[in-house]
Length: 240
Image 1 (tube, helix red, strand yellow):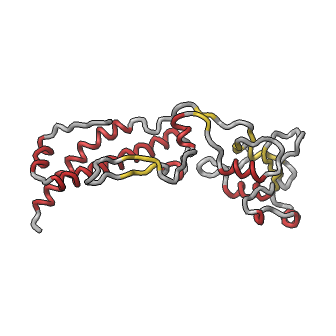
Image 2 (image 1 turned 45 degrees about the horizontal axis):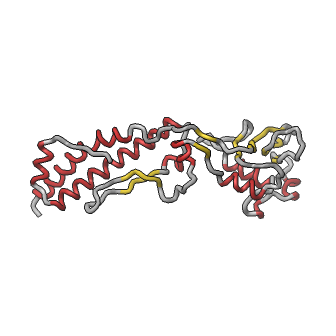
Image 3 (image 1 turned 120 degrees about the horizontal axis):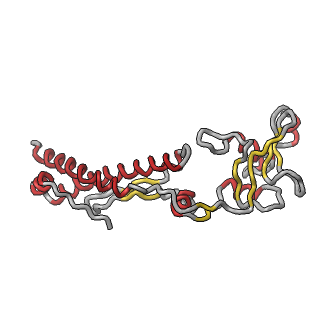
């Protein structure tokens, strides 16, 4: 448990002038403002730890606010994050779970090998965050008949109609090409866009998203308490 004492005569004087309910409300404001500071610190840490983190990554945490009846504020994972969110592995180490793309390929792709994980290759188009671009990913999945909605898969007629468009394929068993999805350009050249691996990536412990969070809490809470108690005293002193 984290305990913080505030040696501040002005704050103590303000507290003595307020009712218990007012004290709890002012403390609630201070705790929630401090939690917001901690959340920003955690998100900023992600920016240092990761290269161009996505909005999904930075929004993995949220605040469970304090209330006058419960003077405790928390920075927690969003309920939608789920047990397999990769940030858990990045923070605590270990083997990550299978992504949605990997599960889709494993279930839908006509491939005899093992697909434990899939990683963008050197020929893949990347978005601003360094991830495989959605447009090329969808084109590739359609071409190799691996879309969840089978009506989105590319047909033979469509391939003949768009001969100038790059095509995608998975090498047959025994091919000299390494396992994965390859792109065939209109000029006949090929480039690999996605690696298939037999093993899940394993991460070392830990990247330290919460490093310094306790220091932020200790540093910011006393100032927020002084401000919110002064605000409550001013409110009670104002004429109705």
